Image (cartoon, rainbow, N blue to C red; front, side):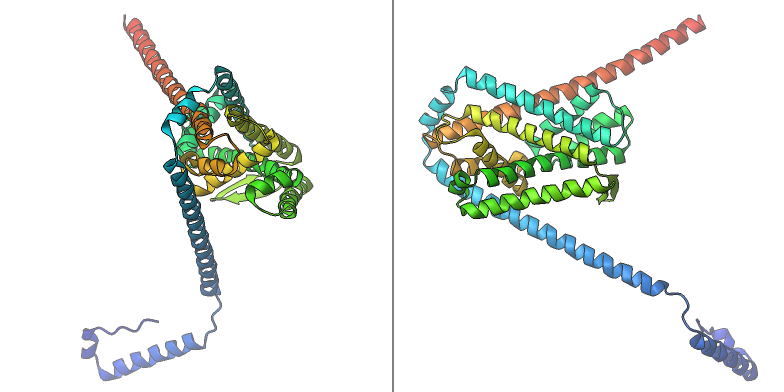
Length: 380
C-alpha cells in the first residue's frame, strides 16, 4: 500500500498525524498478514521463462542454420574456383554449341512436365483446405510462384508474395494462402525424402562412390529416412492431425492425400532431374535412378545454402560427383539446364503476370466506361 505524505500534512495537529500513522500501520500489517491468493505473478513468470527458452532455441537454430549455409557456400566457392581456374573457354563454347536440338527439345518437354506437375501441389493443397478455385487461377499461381522463387530464392517471401497476389483476387484470405504454401511445401519435402531414401537403400553401392560413405552406412541412412516416412504415414492415418507453424494452425492431409503428395513430389523431382539428364554429354556409367538421387542431394544442398535457386552450390556438387568426358562439357550442360529450367520459366512467368495485370486493369477500365455510358444514357 502506498504511504506518500504531502508537505501540507506537516501542519496537522500531532494527535491527528499520530492517529493517521497508526491507521496506516494497521493497514500495512493487515496487508502483510493477508496470504497471496492470486498466483498470477508466478504464472506470468513461468510464461516468461518458457518464452525466453523458446527464443533461445530459435536463436540457436538460426545461428546453426546460418553457419551451415556459410559452410556449404564456402565449399561450393572452393570447388567452383578450382574448376573455373582450369576451364578452357573455347572448349566450353564448343560444348554449348554441341548441344543438339533433340536434347533441347527433350529438356523443354521435361521442364513443361515438371511445372505442370507443380500445379498439382497447389490443387492438392486447395483440396485439403476445402477451397474451390478455378484451375486456370491455380495454374497461374503455382507456375508463377515457383518460377519466381526458383530463380530469386527465398520462396516464403518471393513465391508467397506471388501466390498472395494471384489467390487474393480469387477471394482467399491471407491465412488460407499461407496454409496453402505450407501444404505445398510438405508435398515437396515428402517427395524429396522418398527419392533419397529409396536411392540410398537400392543404389547404395554406386552412390557410395559419389558420396564417399560406406555402402552399409548409405543403406542405414536410406532405411532411416524410409522408416521416418512410414511413421509419418501411420501418424496421419490414425486420426486427423493438426500442425502449428509460424502462428498458423492447419489440419495435415490424411493418408490418401499424403500418398498423393508423395507421388506428385517424386514425379516432379524426376521430371526436373530428367531435364539435366537429357542434356548431359554422356550417360555412360550413370543410370537415371542414381542420377536422380544425386540431383535431389544437390538440390538439398542448394536449399541449405539459401542461395537463389541454389546457384553455385548445385553446380559445384554436380561438377564434383558426376562423371563426364570433361568439366567443360558438364558445365555446358549445367548452364543449358539453368536456361531451360530457370531462366525461360522465369521470363514466361513475368510475361504472364504482366498480361494478367494488364487484362485485369483493362476489364476495370472497360467496366468504368460502360457505367459512364449508362449514366449518360440515363441523363439523356
